[in-house]
Image (cartoon, rainbow, N blue to C red; front, side, top):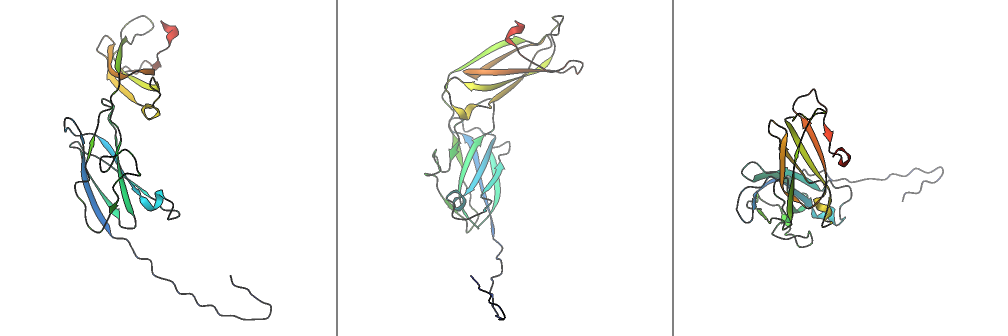
Length: 212
């Protein structure tokens, strides 16, 4: 605290340090199905540990990349922080349990990565979610009962087992030329179903129980 008094002159000297630019290092790895070792389309997140535990104010703290078709990813990170890594599947056809590196489910157990060189093999082997699966058939028709070739989207809005991380799951399939379709391997729960006809003369429509 500087106190300025009336009719006085004071000189205060300040010494500042030049901002040091961080060094960047590359982190690479892959995301695979634990059982089949097939590549998994996934988002890989790196969280700054210092940000997670509020030791640095106003830190960005989150860096994101995605895997390619072979399940590989690469990201360049500043050595300003230490990190924990997290992989989340982006696939709709198979449901996986998100994972922290190295093979743990909690950020408190995650291995902390300190960057002083490039790091390889930060790999994730995601486990499939064990759950009951079902399905349903249907048909997209116009007002006269004619089948319409369409894309049909099923949005999960209320999982039967109550798991919130499953909400937002969706599956898209294509009908045959007669408008017939069938969903399989869906998690039990309540869905909103949307049909989008390929003929743009028809508007998209939601399934309504009262239409039966």
